[in-house]
Length: 149
Image 1 (cartoon, rainbow, N blue to C red):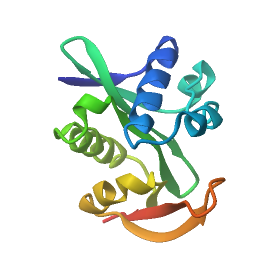
Image 2: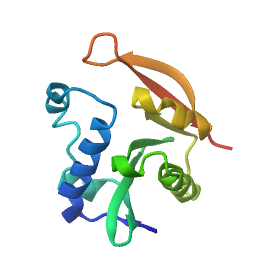
Image 3: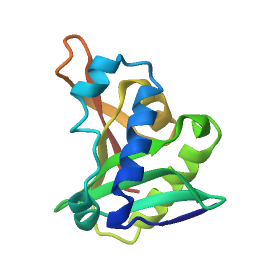
């Protein structure tokens, strides 16, 4: 099990992981289709953001990505293939992310959480600081923050 930097050629594979992971939460096919563009990882994205993939037995099973802002780091994505959810792989990715960014100069780490994954982030010390309504009426996306210690 290793984590390595993703390359632009990984865009289709990471898009597939993203879409399968999102489908894990039993969203309707119509909704997943409506989110198609937002769930697509492009070559340009891979060339302009730090993206790291989790490889087990030569198979990419998950990844995370983030963006560096002036005084903050935003965790953009953290996705796993459904068969790896709940098996400690998310924790492995999160720990790698947190260790990797320790070297960077930032005041805060934040993310917009999948509502069903809010508990996962809470276990890693994130706190919900606000939320916003998504395009789906009545569905709110938590904005979560982890203070730099």
